[in-house]
Length: 101
Image (cartoon, helix red, strand yellow):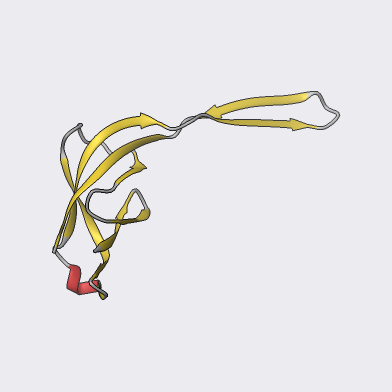
């Protein structure tokens, strides 16, 4: 059985026991969060829409961190203009404990 859940404006395919990195959530470590279900496939049967109202996936917050640094370098040719920037995207790592139907 797998499900499609939404968090942080993105959709993820999950099943019980999966861990994934999502956009930073403002919750404490060890807390259980409920992610809304968009689609569920159970033994070849697909459920979507109103049949999933009130159903959710339980996930435990495992870790907060920052991803690898991305280097951004811009320049203008023949003008001696150079600029270097960096960015590290924060994330929350969660573990799917259960899909509640």
